[in-house]
Length: 199
Image (tube, rainbow, N blue to C red):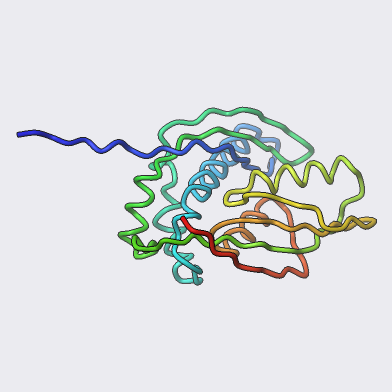
């Protein structure tokens, strides 16, 4: 009997995770930040595989079945950097994520259409306030660029204390906004435009 082995599809992604330091417990903050980064890595790989818009019920199902067990889709990871600033602990990791395992799970959950031939990408345009220094602006761009699902970030206008950005991403806008809120980034006056690209 001949056995055929299917090579596992692995994607290497670089993502950021951030957590708050409570009661001076750096070890716990680091553990939480790494956990968030791992979930972001899995979301980054899963987002292009999701079929169409994801409603709240499917979003909750996705969180429960995929994100709450994100570690099982990680084949390896390494911490590239760690930064502690006031009460924030931020890590950047490089993770090897099993796209094959995620694809199979999404198909089982009915969240991926295996016959889908086009990939939807979206462009979100919105305002972000509270920017008082140039360094904060560059830090903000870096965080958004490393957010799971984001393909590109473009500044549209820059005014005192406020910037308007255009964010190109794949997956659900709900997932994107949740990830941005986890980083302490609130987007106001947001509009979303959808593109379709041949896969």
